[in-house]
Image 1 (cartoon, rainbow, N blue to C red):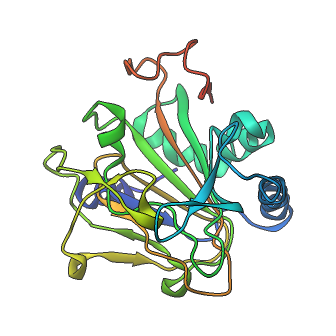
Image 2 (image 1 turned 135 degrees about the vertical axis):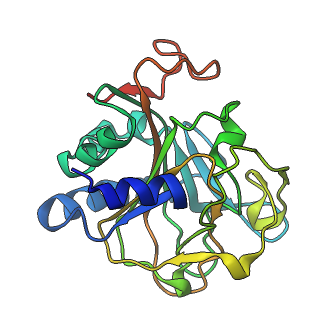
Image 3 (image 1 turned 30 degrees about the vertical axis):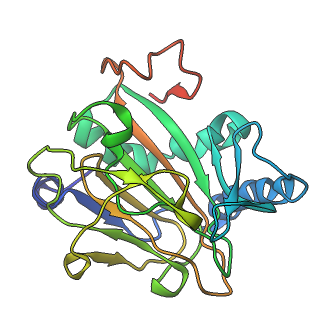
Length: 245
């Protein structure tokens, strides 16, 4: 259960960070599932079945080097157990209600020496909504700091509910549309493995390039009230929308 201070922080700052919320055997089990996905990608020469390869500086795909698995809970259904971890759900339900769906499930391995995930953006830019009821969740399965491109947040950037202009990325960030921010105002979320970050889908966030010799596994998805009607993600039609509780 969230404290009144945590609820206030979420409303005002747009995010909450729970260090090492997932630990021990469950953390290792989930990481093992992600290791298997990275291995599956090593034989790929092009994008297929939700697996997207890492682009190089020219935007060309690098064979065998995984960038993202889109719809990861369909590719590996056991990851739904992670989305349903009681320690996570007890916090999510305090923010958006007791009956939940989830959509847009992703895995970013952020592989060493050049791995990327996302530039600066707002999740709701991609969803066709400004709804404050879309709650994004990033789960970090490995230790993360600035050297391996930890998450960056722009506190309070959700407050107006406005979506800023996004433009198509290039090179290693060619998978998506991004924006520019004053990075001097950014919060770097350096955290241990098992950390869960909940944030408004209107909050500006992103990550840089992993220049270290370590990977930086993370999953990302979006919780919503079960009765929230999202035109692009209708329940029963959009395959990557799941009943959570």
